[in-house]
Length: 193
Image (cartoon, rainbow, N blue to C red; front, top):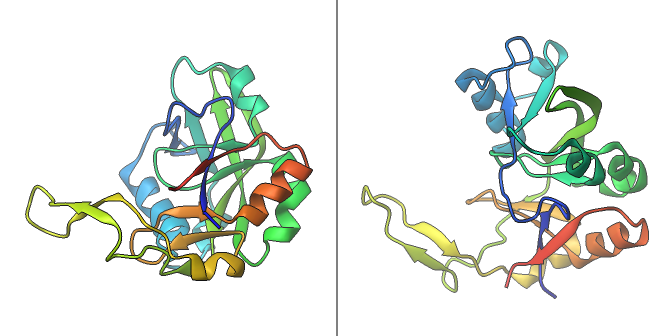
């Protein structure tokens, strides 16, 4: 049983199409990015800051609105998943154990859409088999950089979507693929192997 990465069907060839920006200024902000990464990727802290601000994802310039609106999953420059309202309505309850959804505003060209959600992946497991994965040395001589992950299969039945405990890589089980296909959601999956 192989794990899969989520990709956008209409936007699959271009990673990181959305940047998270300050709701107030509309510009990328190191403080905004740090808080979002800490909470949504590293699973640190609580969601208190979300009561006082909106999460805003800004599409890269030139990205057609039609492609954004057709996708049920959007990729961001940081590893925070963005899901459409259709995705959350169709399979959100199945993902309660694995995901925590928060409202997100998506801006594309001069349009603003408030029917998206970002998700914190709550299921964190040691998914990557260090010994069987490939690494390359880092430029500074620090921790080697993972280039070809090899995933442990023994966790496949414990989640629909999860992050690796060390590398924070997000993967999906085949069961999530089946759910998405059954609901005809516009999400593409890429095999990890």
